[in-house]
Length: 420
Ligand SMILES: Cc1cc2nc3c(=O)[nH]c(=O)nc-3n(C[C@H](O)[C@H](O)[C@H](O)COP(=O)(O)OP(=O)(O)OC[C@H]3O[C@@H](n4cnc5c(N)ncnc54)[C@H](O)[C@@H]3O)c2cc1C
Image (cartoon, rainbow, N blue to C red; front, side):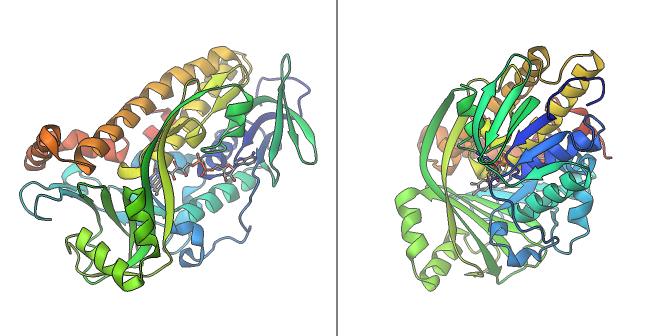
């Protein structure tokens, strides 16, 4: 790492090579903040190195992400976007977003419609498969000179001016350890960073669906009164379903026959794009909210789901994680410029103050939407629906919401502000 001397094996060690951890490593190297060979990435389950993989052939792509403009820019800086763009059908741009409650007709008064054209933008974002994004980020990390090892972290020891990482086969030292190891983060636990969490008692069902009508390049979302149904447009012409609903009802739908499921999902969508039919297996994810009480301690920082998990109804989890990664890179750059170690508390506390407030605001907003719109009803639910209808009729009121969906609101790190 520029300006940092020392005898550690690595300058930075990242635990967890999911989309966020792998992009973090690639960004540190591509931005010139670390030298080739000085960033270690430990991933216990590295997907096959075959790249590119046709999207439809990777079961990991059943869970997709709606990637914001801010995330697109971060991925460009990290060298991940060009790898994705080179692969046919890996990127599915969407131009419109349409949201409506169960009490209103799909396209009538009471619905909320965003169009990229109103913002003079080419699209509102891209739908990308989890597997495609992870593979592209791992490939970009290795191409930039990162050291990827398929190993699981077993133990962390905080020494006076370094951190020791113990895996099944080796012990290495680093100046800074970054926990990007997801919901059940071992780094978080071993660093003694506590959490506050809540089980939503819901499952999200994901699957690919063939649609009778065209999806119109639109991300469709209906608040059902007992959950939320989202249909995300794929460049193949199919839609990716994300249907969150109470656990018992979801479990019933997971074992229902294909015909029963098709009928239920078509009804839940109010036939906004006609009959829907399963085109893949069904998968489910339990939903909970998690906030780490602290994101950092000396020589250790958490990013992505290791730091926070929010309800997926607005598709923001990876987007927040990539903003964490870009903010941490900027703080590391600041530390280096001051002659500090990247693991110095003063730098990491800056990162924590910055990202914790932004992430908690989003988590709070998702809780409110889940409670009062997705599980509507009652006076507050009715008020929330009226508010949505009002926003839907007024372009000036709609703009800040559209900017938030693009990820261009809030205090953005420099890697999210402009393209590479
Ligand atoms: C149904 C659903 C839909 C979603 N839709 C969206 C969306 O549209 N947009 C969006 O932005 N977000 C979305 N999200 C959220 C998104 O899935 C998460 O925020 C994202 O996957 C987090 O990425 P990550 O890299 O932080 O963690 P993960 O993807 O969980 O990666 C963690 C990695 O760490 C590795 N690991 C764990 N422990 C160890 C260890 N001890 N040693 C080594 N490696 C380890 C794991 O193998 C894994 O690869 C959705 C979530 C769900 C459930």
